[in-house]
Image (spheres, helix red, strand yellow):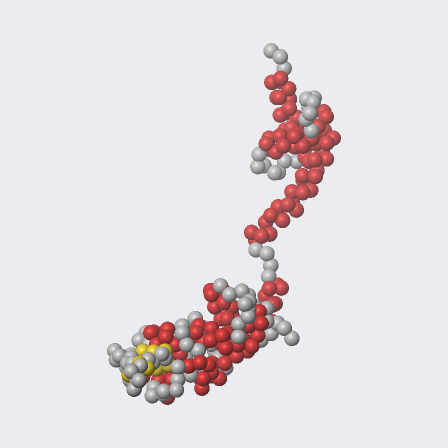
Length: 256
């Protein structure tokens, strides 16, 4: 049943479902490779299995001399594999990804000295370069929070296949902020007063002015100008203020 309600998923499960929502479509291998790349770069850390430093050490120890991999380890400042001249005069060039590590003693390695190696490995994928480790990558556990933060930073769209119960509950229980509530609260307070003023003006306006063309709405506008920001006037005080305003206007129009 979708969306998946678990708080954590493995890389493998994410690669199972996420490609279905990607346009243009991505393959399982491509999606897993993207997650692996983010893991090597430290953007995703996962909740299980070895750290990237531990995995790099294990890979160097067990794969250093392997010739059937898509990577080759380069130690320190040593030169990479040189082209080999074949009997027919052509050159055989090693196109494997070069992973440069600080030394042959893994005990001296740390995150900082292995930075270049991590970035080089982020350009690889286990399926193509070291398939015996693919299963290990598929089992890395990732929390929804970590996945959501990463995909937001990368600019990926919000997936529909995964929504933990806690996330859904938080979304359902989310309440408007004070700033969001303020406009509605003000309107609720003002609407009865505005309606009261309108009704009173409709009754009293004919007694307040004799200038043709004036309406209760133009009188209301003048009333607002007269009142300023003071919203505590009683309805009779509003009328008195309006009456005084028009009395002054009538005096101004009187001939000398």
